Image (cartoon, rainbow, N blue to C red; front, top):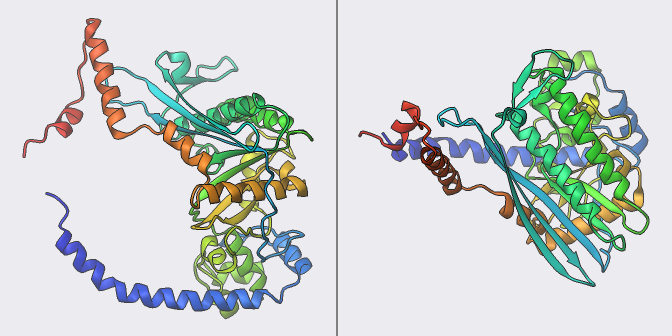
Length: 408
């Protein structure tokens, strides 16, 4: 039976008054929290966010740029390059008779100014053989892990970074480069210990780490390369957590006893609790402006899996691209270079302006990478047809057959 929209509409209408009232209350509390935080000196904010112990909410560390603020973009260069690589995949399907996966990488390279032009590419890679479908323990043990589900997504991300490094290295060395990745590089599933240690070692230590090192080495005085990971409409709470932390007048013990991630029994804390970073920066950032640079204690540990000190991606800022607030993660070596940081801001704002609020290179790379529902069905049909042509049995699961041919 289809969704009963009549009942659903009734349920929605019954909740909207409360939602509207809560939205007005949240806006008032956020205004008040931002006003109170204006009186916090930069040094005090940095000390308090660095010295925090374990609390029930995530808090970023502030630095020389402070807790709050809106920084205008510098002027973008006349001659520069923006490029992005994105990916999509077809996972291993237990309903198909052939065990396989497919990763499609799409890319966009746009040259601005002299020699203006645009190059697009789409590169599918099919994995059928066991050597491509499994990661195996390198120590001679019998352990092996099928590359499927979240692990296939992690492999796809690694390949995106590797392909981005290839594209950057092929560029002329006479103009700045903005190298864009779509979304975060956090490998949360690898850190949750659901996979053997060798999986993280192989993906991050043996592949991601060298690819990031290549991107760093590609940045020179003649061709500075600003590498950023861009997350549209983020749900993070770290910067808002830092705001909450500096306004709280209680220690860690009281906080853990009286507070949760979204609420607090402490009046000084509860007024600043429960906000997303995006809500905060929708209030304080003008179009094209960025926030201060933060260091993420939450993300700093993620590359303990394989990256050495100085190669982490634990810094981030927020950007008002004109139509939305985005989170921009940068490697530590870019965060430590004020000129390269400013260049990343300038070129990223220009990309958003050209893309009507969203980086045009990421948008075009996505269009080259995306695998539509029609593509997936055609891939299934093509696989079955080619197997049948070679005289192989192609039984499908009863569940898969039933979904495509409902009886009622």
